[in-house]
Length: 118
Image (cartoon, rainbow, N blue to C red; front, side):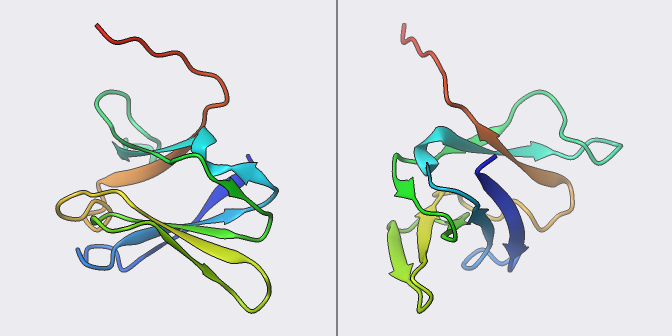
């Protein structure tokens, strides 16, 4: 994968909870979906109902970082001194997701997909 989960920050604190990802090579973040899923008995993701955040289309460069806050907010970015950019996204959830030890994040790259409405 060209974008990878790096760390969690301020888990369990509603105003600050976030996931940090690193961009390993140039890619479009819009090809990724982050899932919040229950952690199974062996520490692996479980099947069934999941909450999902599908990132909007946005080209990123190797060395950039992606920060996804659990809370609501307005997308933004910040240039760093080394020339890389931190891209901030907001899931818009109420409450926290990562502080109880029961959930885990799964980053899925979906280059190809199909949709249909009723």
